[in-house]
Structure formats: C-alpha cells, structure tokens
Amino acid sequence: MEFVIENWGFISKGLLMTLKLALVILLFTTLISVVLGTLATLQSRPLRWLIHAYVELFRSIPLIVNVFFIFFGAPLLGVDLSPFAAVTLGLTLWGSANGIEIVRGGLLSVARHQWKSAWALGLRTWHIYVYIIVPQSLKAILPAYTGLLTLLVQATSLGALVGVGEFLKVGQIIVERSTMMGGENPAFTVYSVVLLIYFVICSALTWFSRYLERRLGRTSTRLSQPLP
Amino acid sequence: MSFDFDYLLVQWPALLDGLWMTLQVSALSIVLSLLIGVLGAGIRLFKLPLMSQLVALYVELIRNTPILVQLFFIFYGLPAVGLKLSLYWSGVLCLSLWAGAYQIENLRGGLATIDKGLCEASMALNLQSRQFFRLIAIPIAFRISLPAMLNTAISLLKNSAYLQTIGLAELTFVAVDRIATDFRAIEMFAAICVIYLALVAVLALLAGRLEARLQRPFQL
Image (cartoon, rainbow over all chains, first blue to last red; front, side, top):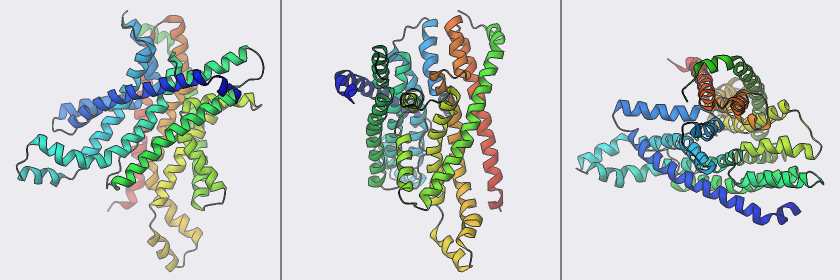
C-alpha cells in the first residue's frame, strides 16, 4: 500500500485527467446525441438512414481500433492531433453512436397520442417538445444515459494506450518505475488499487442510474443499455 | 499518400492469421462465458448462501471496471503474486470473465420474467419443480434472454481487440505491428475496420435468424 501513499500526488493528477477526459467527452457526446437523436425521429428517410449508418458503424468497430485509427491515421492525413484530442474524438464518436440510440428511443417512447393531443390543442412544434415530449422522454433517457456515462468513464482508460496521462497510465508508470528500481513487483497492488478506484467511481454512477430509474418510475420501454 | 490496395494484398495472409486468432480466442471465450453465465445465474436463482453474494459482487466488479484494467490486472498483476498464465490464456480468462458477468445478468433477466402464476399452475398440474424448470421456466427464460446473450457474444468479439495491448497476435495486433514498420496506418485500419464490420454483421444476421427460429412455436 505504501506505493499508493507515496505516489498520491501523482495518482490524484491521473484521476483528475480521467475526470477531465470524461467530462469533455460527455459534453460533446451529449451535444451530438441530442441533435442527431432528435433528427433521427423525424420523417425524412435519407436522414434516418444516414444517422442509422453512423450509429451502426461506430457501434460495430472495436473502440480500441477506432481510437488507434484516429491517433495513428490523423497525422498521415496531415492533421496533428494530440493524444488527448484523439481519445476525445474517438470516444465521442462511439459514445454519441450509443447516445443517439438512447435519445431516439426515449423520444419514440412517448406515446403517439401525446403528439396528436398537443396538435389538437394548437401547440407549436417547439412547445410540444419543450412542455410535453421532452419531460416525458427524460424518464426513459436519464437512467440509460447515466449508464452510458459509466461506460464512458471506463473507456477513458484507453487514453493510457496513446499516452494521455490519465489514471491507468499513472498506474502503469508507477509499476514500471518501481520495477526498474528493483525490489518486488508492485503490479498486483497497483492494478488492484486502480480496479478498486474505478469500481468506486463507476458503482456510484451505476447506483445513481438505478436511483433515477426508481425515482422516475419505470417506463414501459426500457432502453437497451449500451455494451462497451 | 494515396490509398494503396496492393499493400493490403501483400499483407493479406498476415491479416488472415490475425483473424484466425481473433476467432479462436473469441469462440473459446464465448463458450466459457456461457458456462459462467449458466453457473452464476443458477447460484443466484437458488440463492445459495455466500456463493450468491460472491457472484453478485463478481458481476458488479466486472461491470463497473474498465475491461482494459481487468486485462492488465490478469496479465501483469497476477504473475506478481505467482499466478502466471500464458498470453493466450490470460486473454481467454479476461474475455470469459468479462462476458460471463454480463451473461449472468442476461440469464437472470430472462428468469425474472417467469411469472409466479406459471409456477403455481405447474404445481396444480402436479409437476415436480425439476420438471417445471426443464419444461417451462428454462425454455421461456432462454428465449427472452437470447437477444441480450447474443449481443454480449458480439461485444466479446469486438473486445478481443483489447488483447492487442498484451501482445496476443490477433487481428488488431497484426495491423498495429505492420503499421509500426510500414506506416500504412490508413490502409491497415480501414482493412481491419471492414473485417470487424463484416464479422459483426454476419454474427448479427445469424443472431436474428436464431431468434426468429426460436420464436416460431409462438407464432400463430
């Protein structure tokens, strides 16, 4: 355990980087998910197909391949991406593919007659969304979206592979450093602690997701939770 | 730099070797994860004391930690306390444990939909509890769990790409390895993306077929 105490400053820096990554990705993911998820519920067929293709593409490619493609491929196309930017872009593409499905499913979970009643009352489309559709769809969206956030936090560990100094990378560096200095191999302790801290963060989020589900009442349509 | 198809033709045999390794590891892990799933769901269903809590903890632990950290723990952490596994078996262990936790939940979800009334009805018909499980509960629960179970299997196949990080020569490893010498990143990644997409599409198609086949008795 002395590894943890000795390196606490270093570890907390890594944790901060993980949280920063997760927040930036969450922000972009939410933006894209809301816009494209809403567009995907509209009538336009080409638009729906395009969004569907985007969703299927990024849900089918392994996340690690996605991140590597961007990180190693971008310089060859003349774009210089920092490791942080590459991971953010890669995880945002994947996260929003999942987020779009959640938003779309949530909006479609609101019964059709709610739309018809609102039209009958002469509400504008904008008002129908703000006062009727969105509040009801949030019941389905929020628990699933919190689940997605858990996966996003987990996925930031991919940053370690391209050189972002996030939590897992810090763990790797601590192991390498003490192995080089001789003495016993601390890999077991260090990775146990890394697992434990991720577990605490993600369990809290999972608990929050379940709490939301209970609090908001179970909707008839349970949105499928994305898999990593 | 233009897209070089000839390069891919030259590298094709290496990619095929990687693909073969990916398929092998995934297939073995899918089978093992199903075993874990059935065992774990059984333990949870019959509420075996202590075992049941341990299984619940295992599921939470796997689902709330990154698979990459689990892999590093198995491959770098366990040897430090004297448990050394080969590359291949570390990979299989990691993928099986990961997917096993999800399979337990998938199966439990299916079993949770079995109505109490069914149990009472079968008791009224004088079925033994073993007959109830074999003839009624399991066939129904299995059909309900199946889509989620197949999804987990597909995810496992995708996640086998993580084994690149410990150096198992699967598809992604081969691609990254070649890129390190030839710098043909765009071609290589485009190629493996197409391969993964095709694999997932084929599996999803087969999964859809299987689901439709199992739904047949319920169609009028």
